[in-house]
Amino acid sequence: MKRTIFSLFLDLLFPPRCIFCRKLLKNKEKGFCQACRENLPFTRGGEAVQTGQFFTCCVSPLYYSGKVRESLQRYKFAGASQYAAYYGTLLAEAIREHLSNRYDLITWVPLSEDRLKKRGYDQAMLLALATALNLDDVAVDTLKKLVDTPMQSGLVEADARRANVLGVYLVSDPALVSGKRILLIDDIITTGATLSECARTLLSAGASEVVCAALARSEKKQ
Image (cartoon, rainbow, N blue to C red; front, side):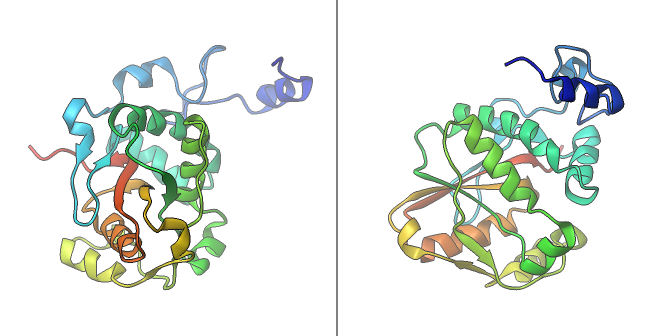
């Protein structure tokens, strides 16, 4: 599809920049530059997959460090919601490689209503929708967050993170998930406490299995 005059005009006013390093993109680059494609902290092979409580596995294409961390911080807290479209291409690639034919339904870890009002958008929902689009699929709303808990990033200990999210999610339509293998999407996985609690909630509502995908995982321990 040819670019419209309006889109060309916008590019002149606001030249597209790499979502990771913020450098101006060249003509054929979309979303992120070639240098970042080659040098970002990508997970390799089995590094992309980790296990957790209540979910079978979680795949992630990137480590949460350096430019990836800075980019996700802009995405979540500085209004850069447009990043979701490009994150979705990366996450879809990881899902194709590691989770092909492992799920029946795609969903996401939701924000509370209060947090959604403050932020203006649900970053995990946008990521799930973009990822599903790249997989020629759709993502559906299955979970509600009933309590606006403190942010997980502000809690250091794994036990505190687990306690912070215990019992705060509800399946909105149990019939939708009953007997289904669920692919649960979030932006970042660190201790896995949030994904585990969401997975537990889905399994309690009748889901047969939960697998997960997150754009970035915590850095590999040396």
